[in-house]
Image (tube, rainbow, N blue to C red):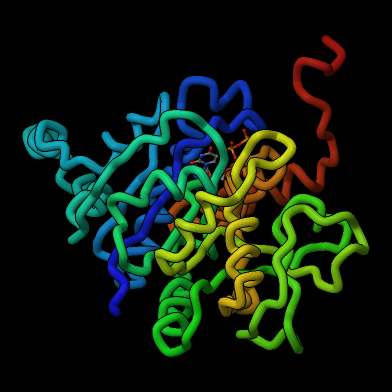
Length: 306
Ligand code: UTP
Protein backbone atom coordinates (compact mmCIF):
# COMPACT_ATOMS: atom_id res chain seq x y z
CA UNK A 1 0.00 0.00 0.00
CA UNK A 2 1.63 3.28 -1.10
CA UNK A 3 2.34 5.73 1.70
CA UNK A 4 1.31 9.34 1.09
CA UNK A 5 0.61 10.75 4.56
CA UNK A 6 3.07 12.15 7.07
CA UNK A 7 2.05 13.11 10.60
CA UNK A 8 4.13 16.02 11.90
CA UNK A 9 3.75 16.48 15.68
CA UNK A 10 4.35 20.11 16.66
CA UNK A 11 2.29 20.40 19.84
CA UNK A 12 5.08 20.13 22.44
CA UNK A 13 5.61 22.96 24.90
CA UNK A 14 9.35 23.30 24.29
CA UNK A 15 10.14 24.06 27.92
CA UNK A 16 13.84 23.40 27.35
CA UNK A 17 13.86 26.48 25.11
CA UNK A 18 12.37 28.97 27.55
CA UNK A 19 12.08 31.89 27.32
CA UNK A 20 12.40 31.82 23.52
CA UNK A 21 9.59 29.29 23.04
CA UNK A 22 7.20 30.91 25.52
CA UNK A 23 4.98 32.56 22.93
CA UNK A 24 6.33 31.22 19.64
CA UNK A 25 6.54 27.63 18.42
CA UNK A 26 10.03 26.14 18.74
CA UNK A 27 9.39 24.52 15.33
CA UNK A 28 9.38 28.05 13.84
CA UNK A 29 12.84 28.96 15.16
CA UNK A 30 15.11 30.11 12.34
CA UNK A 31 17.81 27.70 11.25
CA UNK A 32 19.83 29.73 8.80
CA UNK A 33 17.25 31.44 6.61
CA UNK A 34 14.21 29.22 7.14
CA UNK A 35 12.13 28.10 10.11
CA UNK A 36 13.02 24.57 11.21
CA UNK A 37 9.66 23.06 10.28
CA UNK A 38 9.96 24.32 6.67
CA UNK A 39 12.99 22.05 6.16
CA UNK A 40 10.95 19.15 7.54
CA UNK A 41 8.14 19.84 5.06
CA UNK A 42 10.58 20.24 2.13
CA UNK A 43 12.30 16.96 3.06
CA UNK A 44 8.96 15.11 3.19
CA UNK A 45 7.88 16.60 -0.15
CA UNK A 46 11.17 15.44 -1.73
CA UNK A 47 10.53 11.95 -0.39
CA UNK A 48 7.19 11.82 -2.20
CA UNK A 49 4.77 12.50 0.64
CA UNK A 50 1.84 14.58 -0.60
CA UNK A 51 -0.30 14.89 2.53
CA UNK A 52 0.87 16.42 5.77
CA UNK A 53 -1.08 16.27 9.00
CA UNK A 54 0.23 18.63 11.68
CA UNK A 55 -0.69 17.78 15.25
CA UNK A 56 -0.72 21.25 16.77
CA UNK A 57 -1.43 22.69 20.18
CA UNK A 58 -1.67 25.98 22.08
CA UNK A 59 0.35 28.85 20.60
CA UNK A 60 1.19 27.06 17.35
CA UNK A 61 -0.90 29.00 14.80
CA UNK A 62 2.25 30.59 13.34
CA UNK A 63 2.96 27.18 11.76
CA UNK A 64 -0.42 27.10 10.01
CA UNK A 65 0.03 30.69 8.83
CA UNK A 66 3.51 29.93 7.50
CA UNK A 67 2.25 27.27 5.06
CA UNK A 68 -0.72 29.34 3.81
CA UNK A 69 -0.53 31.07 0.45
CA UNK A 70 -0.25 34.75 1.33
CA UNK A 71 -1.84 36.52 -1.64
CA UNK A 72 -1.50 39.96 -0.06
CA UNK A 73 2.23 39.57 0.50
CA UNK A 74 2.71 38.30 -3.05
CA UNK A 75 0.78 41.31 -4.45
CA UNK A 76 2.79 43.68 -2.24
CA UNK A 77 6.12 42.26 -3.46
CA UNK A 78 4.96 42.65 -7.09
CA UNK A 79 3.67 46.21 -6.58
CA UNK A 80 6.86 47.33 -4.87
CA UNK A 81 9.16 45.85 -7.52
CA UNK A 82 10.55 43.10 -5.26
CA UNK A 83 9.80 40.23 -7.64
CA UNK A 84 13.12 38.56 -6.80
CA UNK A 85 11.81 37.90 -3.28
CA UNK A 86 8.93 35.83 -4.66
CA UNK A 87 11.38 32.92 -4.95
CA UNK A 88 11.55 32.90 -1.14
CA UNK A 89 7.85 32.03 -1.09
CA UNK A 90 8.12 29.17 -3.62
CA UNK A 91 7.58 26.64 -0.80
CA UNK A 92 3.99 27.92 -0.51
CA UNK A 93 3.26 26.47 -3.93
CA UNK A 94 4.61 22.93 -3.24
CA UNK A 95 2.01 20.42 -4.42
CA UNK A 96 1.04 19.39 -0.90
CA UNK A 97 -2.19 19.02 1.02
CA UNK A 98 -2.13 20.27 4.61
CA UNK A 99 -4.31 19.01 7.43
CA UNK A 100 -4.34 20.11 11.06
CA UNK A 101 -5.59 18.49 14.22
CA UNK A 102 -5.08 19.46 17.86
CA UNK A 103 -3.51 17.68 20.77
CA UNK A 104 -5.67 19.17 23.46
CA UNK A 105 -3.40 18.14 26.34
CA UNK A 106 0.38 17.80 26.03
CA UNK A 107 0.72 14.18 27.12
CA UNK A 108 3.79 13.31 25.09
CA UNK A 109 4.83 12.39 21.56
CA UNK A 110 3.02 9.03 21.61
CA UNK A 111 -0.19 10.78 22.62
CA UNK A 112 0.30 13.37 19.84
CA UNK A 113 0.55 10.54 17.29
CA UNK A 114 -2.58 8.95 18.77
CA UNK A 115 -4.41 12.23 18.13
CA UNK A 116 -3.89 11.53 14.39
CA UNK A 117 -5.69 8.17 14.52
CA UNK A 118 -9.03 9.27 13.08
CA UNK A 119 -7.39 11.02 10.12
CA UNK A 120 -4.81 8.27 9.42
CA UNK A 121 -7.41 5.48 9.48
CA UNK A 122 -6.12 2.09 8.32
CA UNK A 123 -3.17 3.25 6.21
CA UNK A 124 0.53 3.04 7.02
CA UNK A 125 2.01 6.49 7.57
CA UNK A 126 5.17 8.46 8.31
CA UNK A 127 5.88 10.39 11.50
CA UNK A 128 8.40 13.25 11.23
CA UNK A 129 9.13 15.37 14.31
CA UNK A 130 8.63 19.04 13.53
CA UNK A 131 11.58 20.12 15.68
CA UNK A 132 14.19 17.90 14.00
CA UNK A 133 15.90 18.44 10.66
CA UNK A 134 17.77 15.54 9.04
CA UNK A 135 20.89 16.55 7.14
CA UNK A 136 21.72 19.97 5.74
CA UNK A 137 19.09 21.85 3.70
CA UNK A 138 16.36 19.17 3.56
CA UNK A 139 18.39 16.98 1.18
CA UNK A 140 17.92 13.76 3.16
CA UNK A 141 16.27 10.81 1.38
CA UNK A 142 16.15 8.71 4.55
CA UNK A 143 12.34 8.74 4.70
CA UNK A 144 12.18 7.41 1.11
CA UNK A 145 14.59 4.59 2.03
CA UNK A 146 12.47 3.81 5.10
CA UNK A 147 9.23 3.76 3.07
CA UNK A 148 10.82 1.42 0.50
CA UNK A 149 11.96 -0.90 3.30
CA UNK A 150 8.50 -0.84 4.83
CA UNK A 151 6.84 -1.63 1.50
CA UNK A 152 9.27 -4.44 0.64
CA UNK A 153 9.28 -6.19 4.02
CA UNK A 154 6.56 -7.61 6.24
CA UNK A 155 7.11 -5.16 9.11
CA UNK A 156 5.01 -2.90 11.31
CA UNK A 157 7.53 -0.13 11.87
CA UNK A 158 10.74 1.30 10.46
CA UNK A 159 12.70 3.79 12.56
CA UNK A 160 15.58 6.06 11.57
CA UNK A 161 18.65 5.66 13.76
CA UNK A 162 21.74 7.74 14.43
CA UNK A 163 24.92 6.89 16.33
CA UNK A 164 25.22 8.87 19.61
CA UNK A 165 27.95 9.09 22.24
CA UNK A 166 27.78 6.30 24.90
CA UNK A 167 27.14 8.87 27.67
CA UNK A 168 24.22 10.37 25.69
CA UNK A 169 22.06 7.20 25.48
CA UNK A 170 20.19 8.44 28.58
CA UNK A 171 18.53 11.14 26.40
CA UNK A 172 17.11 8.94 23.62
CA UNK A 173 15.18 5.83 22.61
CA UNK A 174 17.93 3.27 21.95
CA UNK A 175 17.67 0.36 19.50
CA UNK A 176 18.82 -3.13 20.43
CA UNK A 177 19.68 -5.09 17.23
CA UNK A 178 18.38 -8.66 16.88
CA UNK A 179 21.60 -9.75 15.14
CA UNK A 180 24.28 -7.44 13.79
CA UNK A 181 23.58 -3.74 13.29
CA UNK A 182 24.01 -3.41 9.52
CA UNK A 183 22.73 -0.41 7.55
CA UNK A 184 19.21 -1.88 7.81
CA UNK A 185 18.52 -4.38 10.58
CA UNK A 186 15.78 -5.88 12.70
CA UNK A 187 15.29 -4.67 16.26
CA UNK A 188 15.09 -7.04 19.24
CA UNK A 189 14.09 -4.19 21.53
CA UNK A 190 13.78 -0.44 21.83
CA UNK A 191 14.48 1.14 25.20
CA UNK A 192 13.51 4.70 26.11
CA UNK A 193 16.28 6.61 27.92
CA UNK A 194 18.33 3.62 29.20
CA UNK A 195 21.04 4.03 31.83
CA UNK A 196 24.62 4.20 30.50
CA UNK A 197 25.84 0.62 29.94
CA UNK A 198 22.33 -0.87 30.13
CA UNK A 199 22.05 -1.48 26.37
CA UNK A 200 24.54 -3.01 23.91
CA UNK A 201 24.07 -0.20 21.38
CA UNK A 202 24.47 3.53 20.88
CA UNK A 203 21.93 3.81 18.05
CA UNK A 204 19.27 6.37 18.92
CA UNK A 205 15.89 6.87 17.29
CA UNK A 206 16.26 9.88 14.99
CA UNK A 207 12.92 11.68 14.60
CA UNK A 208 11.58 9.75 11.57
CA UNK A 209 9.30 6.70 11.63
CA UNK A 210 7.17 4.66 9.22
CA UNK A 211 4.35 2.96 11.08
CA UNK A 212 1.51 0.59 10.40
CA UNK A 213 -1.86 1.54 11.91
CA UNK A 214 -1.33 -1.30 14.47
CA UNK A 215 0.66 1.30 16.40
CA UNK A 216 -2.60 2.93 17.52
CA UNK A 217 -3.66 -0.15 19.55
CA UNK A 218 -0.25 -0.13 21.21
CA UNK A 219 -0.43 3.60 21.94
CA UNK A 220 -3.85 3.15 23.50
CA UNK A 221 -2.38 0.50 25.80
CA UNK A 222 0.92 2.25 26.59
CA UNK A 223 0.97 3.54 30.18
CA UNK A 224 2.33 7.05 30.78
CA UNK A 225 5.97 7.24 31.92
CA UNK A 226 7.19 8.78 35.19
CA UNK A 227 6.60 12.30 33.75
CA UNK A 228 3.03 11.42 32.74
CA UNK A 229 3.92 11.24 29.00
CA UNK A 230 3.01 8.48 26.56
CA UNK A 231 6.17 7.61 24.64
CA UNK A 232 6.09 6.52 21.00
CA UNK A 233 9.15 4.32 21.56
CA UNK A 234 7.29 2.41 24.31
CA UNK A 235 4.46 1.68 21.86
CA UNK A 236 6.95 0.47 19.21
CA UNK A 237 8.55 -1.72 21.89
CA UNK A 238 5.10 -3.20 22.52
CA UNK A 239 4.84 -4.05 18.80
CA UNK A 240 8.12 -6.01 19.10
CA UNK A 241 6.91 -7.76 22.27
CA UNK A 242 3.76 -8.81 20.39
CA UNK A 243 5.99 -10.56 17.83
CA UNK A 244 5.74 -7.85 15.14
CA UNK A 245 8.84 -7.00 13.15
CA UNK A 246 10.47 -3.57 13.44
CA UNK A 247 13.40 -2.41 11.30
CA UNK A 248 16.02 0.24 11.98
CA UNK A 249 17.66 2.22 9.18
CA UNK A 250 20.84 4.11 9.97
CA UNK A 251 21.29 7.67 8.76
CA UNK A 252 23.92 7.64 5.99
CA UNK A 253 27.44 8.77 6.97
CA UNK A 254 27.68 12.55 7.12
CA UNK A 255 23.95 13.00 7.73
CA UNK A 256 23.13 14.30 11.18
CA UNK A 257 19.91 14.95 13.00
CA UNK A 258 19.60 18.62 13.96
CA UNK A 259 17.29 18.82 16.96
CA UNK A 260 16.19 22.40 17.64
CA UNK A 261 14.49 21.37 20.92
CA UNK A 262 17.38 22.31 23.21
CA UNK A 263 19.81 25.22 23.09
CA UNK A 264 22.94 23.13 22.66
CA UNK A 265 21.83 21.44 19.45
CA UNK A 266 19.78 24.44 18.27
CA UNK A 267 22.90 26.62 18.32
CA UNK A 268 24.83 23.95 16.43
CA UNK A 269 22.05 23.65 13.84
CA UNK A 270 21.90 27.41 13.28
CA UNK A 271 25.67 27.70 12.97
CA UNK A 272 25.97 24.74 10.55
CA UNK A 273 23.20 26.01 8.28
CA UNK A 274 24.41 29.62 8.36
CA UNK A 275 28.01 28.60 7.63
CA UNK A 276 26.77 26.56 4.65
CA UNK A 277 24.55 29.35 3.30
CA UNK A 278 25.37 29.86 -0.40
CA UNK A 279 25.01 33.67 -0.17
CA UNK A 280 26.09 34.62 3.35
CA UNK A 281 28.14 31.58 4.40
CA UNK A 282 31.51 32.77 3.17
CA UNK A 283 31.39 36.10 5.04
CA UNK A 284 30.20 34.32 8.16
CA UNK A 285 32.99 31.76 7.92
CA UNK A 286 35.47 34.62 7.78
CA UNK A 287 33.83 36.33 10.76
CA UNK A 288 33.86 33.11 12.79
CA UNK A 289 37.53 32.46 11.91
CA UNK A 290 38.39 35.95 13.22
CA UNK A 291 36.35 35.50 16.37
CA UNK A 292 37.87 32.09 17.10
CA UNK A 293 41.31 33.53 16.49
CA UNK A 294 40.72 36.42 18.92
CA UNK A 295 39.73 33.85 21.57
CA UNK A 296 37.70 36.39 23.58
CA UNK A 297 34.28 34.91 24.31
CA UNK A 298 33.33 36.94 27.37
CA UNK A 299 29.75 38.18 26.90
CA UNK A 300 29.84 41.94 26.09
CA UNK A 301 27.95 43.00 29.22
CA UNK A 302 30.56 41.24 31.39
CA UNK A 303 33.54 43.05 29.89
CA UNK A 304 35.24 45.71 32.02
CA UNK A 305 34.33 49.29 30.94
CA UNK A 306 36.80 51.81 29.57
P1 UTP B 1 10.03 16.87 22.71
O1 UTP B 1 10.35 15.47 23.06
O2 UTP B 1 11.20 17.79 22.48
O3 UTP B 1 9.08 17.45 23.83
O4 UTP B 1 9.14 16.86 21.40
P2 UTP B 1 8.53 18.92 24.12
O5 UTP B 1 7.46 18.74 25.15
O6 UTP B 1 8.14 19.61 22.86
O7 UTP B 1 9.77 19.72 24.70
P3 UTP B 1 10.28 20.00 26.21
O8 UTP B 1 10.67 18.66 26.77
O9 UTP B 1 9.14 20.67 26.95
O10 UTP B 1 11.45 20.92 26.03
C1 UTP B 1 9.50 16.24 20.18
C2 UTP B 1 8.44 16.58 19.13
O11 UTP B 1 7.18 16.06 19.53
C3 UTP B 1 6.20 17.10 19.65
C4 UTP B 1 7.02 18.40 19.75
O12 UTP B 1 6.28 19.51 19.27
C5 UTP B 1 8.26 18.10 18.94
O13 UTP B 1 8.08 18.40 17.57
N1 UTP B 1 5.35 16.85 20.84
C6 UTP B 1 5.92 16.59 22.05
C7 UTP B 1 3.99 16.92 20.69
O14 UTP B 1 3.46 17.17 19.60
N2 UTP B 1 3.21 16.73 21.82
C8 UTP B 1 3.74 16.46 23.04
O15 UTP B 1 2.96 16.29 24.03
C9 UTP B 1 5.13 16.40 23.17
